[in-house]
Image (tube, rainbow over all chains, first blue to last red; front, side):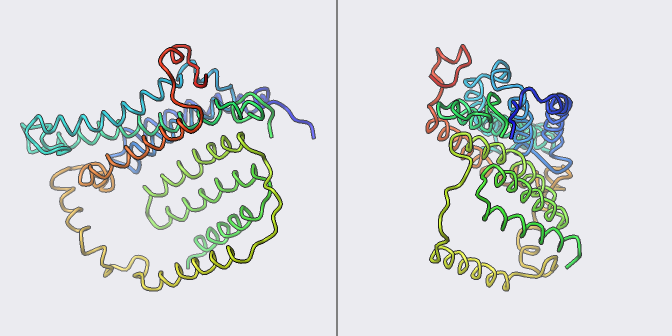
Length: 159
Length: 183
């Protein structure tokens, strides 16, 4: 059976080019619409990372790593967790308990504080999850073993 | 059981049996994605859209990609092994015990089930009163259970660090400026 390179298949390239922006946009929608519809930071982070990984599968991981270098994913992993924790600490400084978002908005009854807290911690979750998924993917495709039969890195033969 | 759910369950059963019997690991990885999608469809029919969403995004989306990534580190075919009886018996016994356990569970949608009377009414009332967002699942996960969710994010972070350390190590500062992951 003849094998062809994933990166040279025109149908895959055209479809990926059309789909990846939509996947990323959908990820952002799920992220910021999580308090009204189903979804939230975890699902949004996974969808966003999946969109970027599809791009890497078709156009090569070097193309993706120019935008999202490995070290950036590592920093974002930590930044997401810290953002979540920082909301909790901010609530403490504003006179509430750790992660009591109502304290973020001392002027009203606390609804706006709750909205703000939920949006920001969901953003932290989304960043941490997306960065972790990307880092795990990089871990697989960057390792020395993968370069031997590494079509998943977007550089070898289609299976 | 409604016909759509029965169809999904039968397809799910067929998929997992095929996955267990396939020797081609690439096809098996793809079929696990399909199994997740079928499970997500079942969750939607049971009105658990948040769970379905997670199952579709994680099971059908990212874990398929990660399985393929793992496959690129190993061979594409499973080694031929004869069927062993003892593991099969253990799996069958565990499955039977789990099915036996479901007999004591309340019927699906039963309004008298304990879970609908213990915490849920409180949380539903307080979401309206204190948080004012329409999605009660988000309110519970992000606000009432904020500690849990923080813990889960730390777990994901730790898992990511663990995988990174196992597969080549974290990026050192000087290499990172060139965007290289592996020395």
